[in-house]
Amino acid sequence: MLKKTLVLFLIALAAGVAQAESVRMPKTGVPAFAFDAPPGWAVLYDEFGNLRLTAQDRASALQLSMIDDPAIENTSLEELAAEIMKAAGAPPFSKQEDGSIAGLNGTTFISQITNDSGVEIVLRVTLVKLDKTHVASQGEMRTTEMTSEQTAAFTSLLGDVRLTLE
Image (cartoon, rainbow, N blue to C red):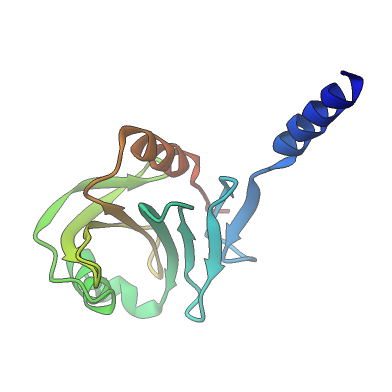
């Protein structure tokens, strides 16, 4: 009995050790995104400086980018959204609505794509102009067949995203 209790304790202890990974993007400087990635989510910094988190079940993904470019001052959010959709291989956005990242107001652009496996994915790109040269970009990719549990986990992740401005 003691051996069984010890094994159960060690399993519970190991389960409790699974911790969230602290993430910051870009890794230095401001403005920046910061949050704790949920355990089990894949965290990838790509060659373009974007940060992508993918749920373990691949039902959803989040891509964060900090656009730092002097030309931003003269570029509309609509033009940026069109470029992002094109780079993602998605059709042009079909809908536009108010949006926010970490409580800062911006605009969300929505498109829908079907991947190679025939899965329909809603792509939501939220853009927030932070200053003359910086725009925060949050890309949400969700399958149209997500369960309420998957949706709740993704919504929780979105609620944890913070922006460090100074």
